[in-house]
Image (cartoon, rainbow, N blue to C red; front, side, top):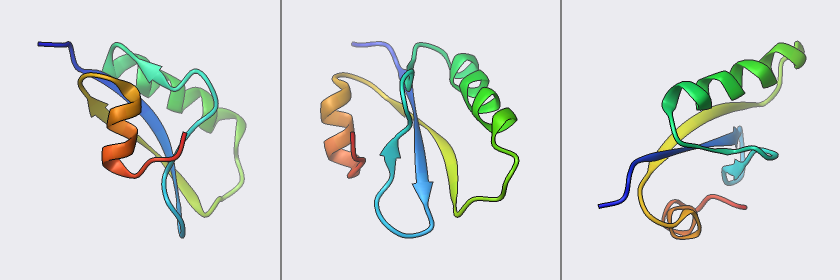
Length: 71
């Protein structure tokens, strides 16, 4: 069985979720949380989007397709 990985996606108020800019794929939850903190530290304005961590196993492309996430 493949190890669980974590992708970070942005979820707009309308429209489909999409991967954030690279790096967006992480081996640990802590690394994914650190990436979100890094992004949020430089974006102080309110946006109509939020960031989410999505766990997955197997191929990233397959996980994206199954969840309707844009690459």
